Image (cartoon, rainbow, N blue to C red; front, top):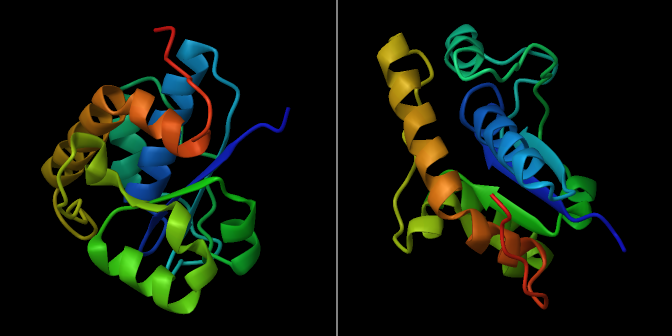
Length: 162
């Protein structure tokens, strides 16, 4: 069986999408769910590390972003992904316009809570904005975990163990 792949997308791939990817990877590992987790940016700051505050707030949660290297989303990434999870409606619209084939598998992260809203970008803001962003991401990924599994493997019943 193919291991499903989820791609988290934000703007620069240095704050929101690497944090979301790392938080989801940790959650899936706790549940024993095999998944490939990637992240990218619509305007990725290629080669840059995750922002210092993003690294710090996840380190407090026992998750490292030290190995993260930012990259711009590519057609190949979108083709490989079973689900593409974006932070804002603008990210969704941009990807749908440039890569219409990917439209059926693009989801707004806030849809995990059955509502549509944009995840605020903490870039350039104080550490408190990163804390708030990480808390929002964590809450969405925890409460919407089973829904995200359904996005990844839509024709199977996959329920979390943890």
